[in-house]
Length: 482
Image (cartoon, rainbow, N blue to C red):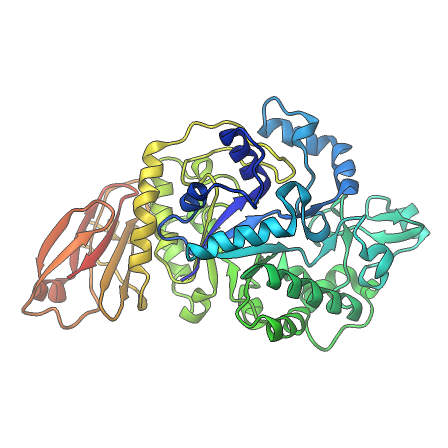
């Protein structure tokens, strides 16, 4: 199953440059660093932000005092040199020269492949930078406006080379000041999107599509109305993905998705979509809410991306204090579907860095958290094999703490595993019925892959009563049964 590690490429290379006392590009990352990236339990690396950033977008960002305030809040000692512009304000889908250019990316991909890792890169379908070549070469790709529109709503439109364009937007927020809106209904854009994604597929094994739901026909029509033109018969993503996969049949498509549109996007061709609903339940709600989410169709769950943080979300160490992060991490790591880990999460970084910045603050690593993740990732890789099943829990009339337990099993051809998480700040006891009816007459050993502890149990008793567990607050068992 797909396990993705997101790396902020520009920041990471800057850290490596300081570490080695020389400029490091994607083409000359030391071998021992690639070995560090290829940690046990990860099979895919997302190099976030490799494309050429926009000088025009950067100039707009530098004039935005609210953005600059967020930069200062995240990075003490901020200088203008630390502001590189947004990687989602793409000037062109060519690897930025500061990272080493296309040849350096090819070398990085080769190094990852030699270690059994796939590479995924970004694609931003909804908007481009105001100095992107399409504004002059393919204006039919964009939502256009009039001088009257610009005069009436200067925050929603922009003039470039004498032409008025709409600024990019999400329907629930004000327009983004540094980008120009593409037209999902335009035949010209659809052809350009196919060409762009085929080019990305020439350079990588997968693509993470930013805010993918914005390009769906119904969403786009509600956002842009008559400005978008005639409503196409075919949705944007089925049209594009089918044609890209004709050239790259194994290209992994990952959607950043919200608004409960994950199922629809899976049916439109995406392999995996962000599971923001699970994230919100883990951060803000309780075990019962998480359990309800995990009762969804298994085919749907296999197409989700489970995560506790990414570059758009606050750091897990800041939002999930104490043992709650550990319990949530065991949960996302051992569920069906893909898993996304964010650079710095394993070390307990607490400051979410704006993507505009090329340098991050110095933070003291949490050695205990780092050791926990070093055990969890390979354990999760061993567990997630075969058939997954959500398990019930039971308790006693005077003790309903089992309601705080989350439990599931994995049954592979040669292995059986049980995961039990106390998703609460209080001790929890309960019985977990196991799904294997061939345990009678056997002695079963349950070895915890996180702690190394082993428990011998009578198989008949496990069948008759279930597995008794007594877990402290926010603690978990990841058990291999033999």
